[in-house]
Length: 204
Image (cartoon, rainbow, N blue to C red; front, top):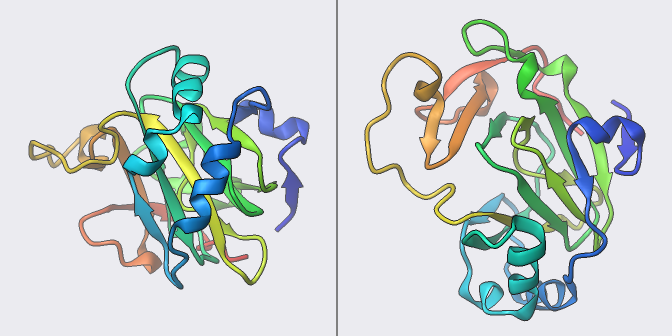
């Protein structure tokens, strides 16, 4: 599978790079976060959210709405699933990492998605990339053997546990957390997730 640079023109339908955002303090603080052998996602981390960078991102990146800043760290080589939100997500690469992305518009009847349509992009360390609300994404993949660290910024409350039981049918049946619609590959074995990714469970 071709891995394109995040600066490639094909990324424009998925998101935009934000070099103007202040991230140096966030990147420094992320050096203290764990780097496990599996994928670890933490939606909200106070030590990140109290930094001046957080205020800059809230104001300049999200127009002043309440945000949460967490991280996704670890080691990963497979697609496994794709998710989307009703909002943009800001990914700030602490290390080089790879994003596998798709378009919500390519979701087929029955909430199925052909993994052959996904594209891979290299997000270099220190780069902040906004992923649009219509961009399908999931955990980053390793760009090297050392694993990855990535800051994840979202509207406050995203990916927290649902406070209601989603219906069994329709788009809302894809909800696995607040503001998180998820479509999984059967090979991933994600309990309770809608199995809709077909084709290869992409591996890098």
